[in-house]
Length: 397
Ligand SMILES: *Cc1c(COP(=O)(O)O)cnc(C)c1O
Image (cartoon, rainbow, N blue to C red):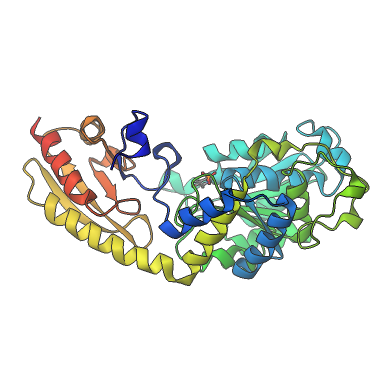
């Protein structure tokens, strides 16, 4: 059967990169796609839907409240806006002009990354703290918690912390200094799943807001995510994301999302209105999240092991390259295979694979070490054989 992509003349690709935005994320479980279709056939009050989403996300993450966002980056933008404005509708209306507001966000220098544009988009200045002197080879230190404490002043809106297994300083130490000074901590945990436990971990460690991607390991819609955390901050985030073309008196948001009695009035369209999320994404994310925590992740890990095995068996005999199995590729517990070509640069092999038919998109993150990596998270049954065929042709060219 022809795919929708064939019918509009766009080639489908083999995604051995993992769930990245530029390769369209991953494959939705059938149950998630069906839930999104069902959601699309009815209308609902979006505040009511996000209110129920808040309860479900709270139950699963252990946070006070939650919001389905248009991705983790959208969550960072909304969460930052919430920390700057609180529940003040006047401030919400003025963003991204932040004069006179708390408009600085402190970040350990080693945590800087391209996604923090979503934080800066709110109109705040990122204040980098510390030096990752580990990089020098002689140094042993990264940013330390006391340096964050030292940088906090009356204009500090939040601390941005990018979670990684190797991130320093430890999150609990950052939370301790931040909370002593009354400053919230926003954790970018976009790609920190699996392990499933990480859905609760950063909240347990004291984070005020945590952003996850819905389109990565959760296998929700590609343009979905979760922002979970303190009830007042989630309410402020929701207010800056929803369509508020409504009179205060005629609007009755669910208390699980927004306590209307705390508002002097309704803001206009907020800075987060441009990262709106549809009912289909909200339902798709909630369905995928439930599957993810109810054993879906473990089941996918088993499937990925079989795919990785098949791929390794096919690649290991190829002339002109040596293959090695990878226990953890793009994620812990998601295996892959690395292929080191001996007759060309790894970057050249990546280009040839992408130019093949069908195009194979591999993980280029270790190309500088001479390795092309194939991740299994987004592969479909049958894909390993196609990759082997593509690699054989590319190496023989
Ligand atoms: C993927 C990622 C994001 C963005 O997530 P989206 O859901 O695509 O918006 C942000 N931060 C980090 C560290 C990521 O890995």
